[in-house]
Length: 342
Image (cartoon, rainbow, N blue to C red; front, side):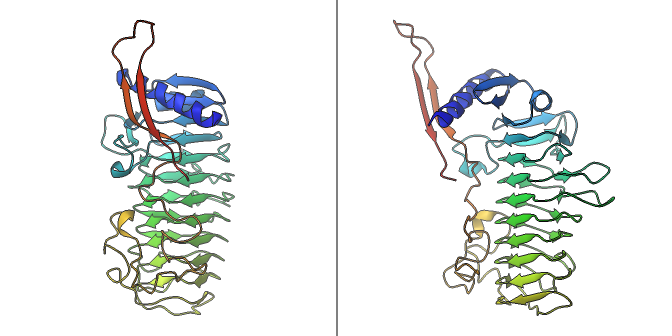
């Protein structure tokens, strides 16, 4: 309760400050500081801090925004229909209509990013770097891909957790290892991962050689392709393919896959334009066909996609502040919030 109260207090302060000027709240335990721009907030934050981004267009001078320390960046969300009337957190390059990217570098281990609409995510700059345990959750990424290395050398990026995102392009592993990719809508490709677990995603418009990796496990995914998955020593179990594929295929193996599962006969709406369309209909063979007995796709598994992709922290739904104090000097504030269960 104490932690929630602190978060709500910070949100209230940030909301009030936002009425006059956009502010960025940097939280360190019970200590709070506000900055006028995101880049300064990141520079002034110390490892372990949390930065709350307002539901607003956020402009930065230079893209990508570099993260080289352990930080949690928490936006208001990207799905305007699901965040209680708040504006979405969208990160742009200043004075342009181009969404900015974020670049994780050495020192950013254990960082966390959620609730943002941005133009790409990359790991490393000019050379592969040693980065681990970064979580990317409930974001909207378009324009550029999520790239987990530069491909310039031996990539030691590992244990990256990518879950419940809407990724308009794809994920390029560049040899990153031991990653967990789950419950995302990915609209183009997923490739070059090592020893990683890719499960309960919807993989749309997958072209030839656009699903690959080495010693990866693909399970419980809906995969919109008629092309044979590539890669080496991968396992494909309990997936649904829109076309016809077969295993074994080269060094890849698979079992219990559903074939020729059209989008029209699988989802509530036959469209990959938004995660909200991708609930499995009761008549589909994909219903409860995952290896764990839940649905194939992003609404299945032990931690299914959360409709609306609302970040986990409490949101202010209503805030009314009196224009003057009462006779005792008290200022009346009517605030209503909603909190998330996950």
